[in-house]
Image (cartoon, rainbow, N blue to C red; front, side, top):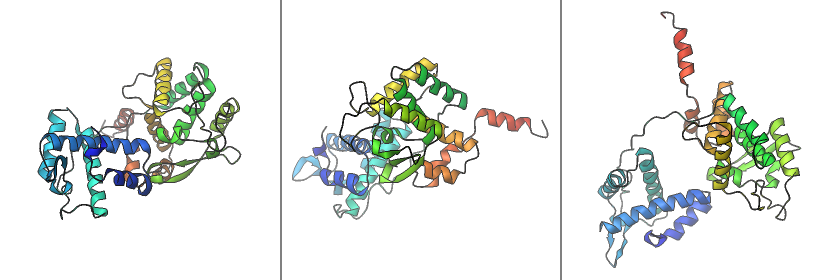
Length: 309
């Protein structure tokens, strides 16, 4: 499958990058889902372009085509509700672009008539305080590159950075004298995140021991042993290795779960959820509400206080 299956693909790519400010990984995720959708339409002979049967005519796409695609995802690909929701969101975004730019000739957007897919409610995975402290200790004492890995884990846990945000960090984004880091996140939203004394010390130790390979201001903060900027996969592998050494075996652990850990621990220390919203770089408060969860220990403690026992 290639991008030639997607009508107006280059214009859509420009829209995602320039107008929406999406990061490369987010754009590629959109393309993967759209390629799958248009490949499905072509293989099923749906919404064909009359002048070129190998291509799809977006103006001929109907809600029933989308429903058939969702059935295909569930029954033939085994995609769960979350995966189907993500793919449908990519298709909605694409058709929204077509309408916005006048490239869609049909008066009715076929994605608007589809109900939302019911998703199972799951509590976010996170580390408790003791587990987080163990992770930091192991990254500092037992890691192959202790100064780098300790600085990464501290930055994740103290600021709640996304993985993409961390790998894109350059030296110019970190201001140790003023004690903050500059981040450009989803939707090109910018934020300044204060740094704690421990995080500043960790970053200073790491930067002092890192040989700059690129001319300023292009120097990436985190690099591999060859001096090349770490990729998101590289960070994942480092994280998995540290978790294994630390004996942290919770299923589903990933660098993104350190973001959950950061905001969950802050919320439990009484930090206002509106402050967390700004720290997380969320567009609206609904995205931050996920951290206002309770665990079994909280529920058990509340039950023990019940006046009727």
